[in-house]
Image (cartoon, rainbow, N blue to C red; front, top):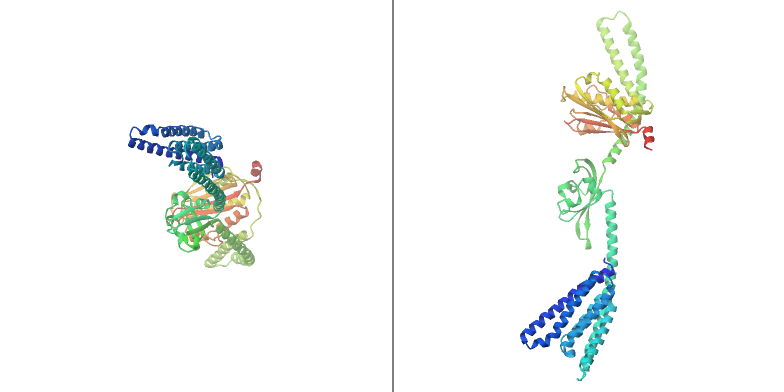
Length: 529
């Protein structure tokens, strides 16, 4: 809202322009009358031309003063006096009390009320009465004054002033109330905008035709869209999935190509009289929440499975040891023919494999305590790759490395086991059915980030289907004929024990990338202060 000074300045400008328009019309009318009456009328209309010229001059002076925006109150009173003077000059030159331009005094009173409200109306009315009566008394001394007419004109001026004063005050009070309401509406609108823009959930509004009308800041960040580019456009171009049901949870890909788990709710918008004016959609990214829920459920299942595995492995190991010892004694006795000896060797070999599997169960169910110390991921990667390069699985593969120093806190032996299991898993995937037998590539990378360090193992094998990806870290789940399903489950358990995180990015036919994040070493945290 403009301030009082700005509003008065605007009124003065418009009234100056209005006065110039009235005087211009008067000039044109005077010129037409002079032309119609002939040469003799020039002398009669000469005073009007003088008044018009003086008005133009005074208006130019006022315009120059208004540019300075100073002494606006004095200029307002000057405008009232100028209007009265113009009316008096025109009336004096056109018959005094018999002039048809007496209404110019009333017009000046109205202008005064517009400029200064009641005060301006009172001043302009009083000035009009005094000047008009004084003018008639001074210029008609030899004539009988038309008292009734003068009284009627003076009464009209007073009535105009009173009415203009009342209306001006009513206008001012209405304007003040309107200003208060506008201020309140602006405050409510600002609060509404602040609340809407502060929501952590996305908010989308639609008109009855399904065109987007609003998208808040959280919605822009989640979708990768900007409100300016979708307003007025059919929302189905980007949000068709939200129209299926009033509420639900869907997998949704945003403009950046990120696959999100989104929960949404659609509800109608109603205006005055409960008339429908559109719809609104509130939606929220539930991806991390669902990942956390899955991680908690997986941890609970692993804990239960670990307890069962430990008890089962303990119960199997003792009778297995007795059986293996007895069979070894029988194997050492003489007198066994070739077939019996071969069968004994098969039993011993399978017993050894079963003992190794039981050992893996125990290692998974009752992991060794962590021996934490500072570990440089780059050194750990180089040492592990030096050993893995001699593994038969790596003989036909190309291993690329991109290492940078990163100090993390952890057990170096268990972290080597994490990397070894990931490398073995990648190599087995490269050798699986449908994967290239020659020229396969494994990429190993590590580096530092603000939270600590990261480690990546990536292959260009066949990738994994979504249902395999969901069960990847469950114990005893495997897609390999000879696998135990404990390798990646052990990796996940070790990473959890290190207060780290592991993620998988895989696409069928385009390979798989495992990324492990580990916390920063204590010495590195101390260096950061």
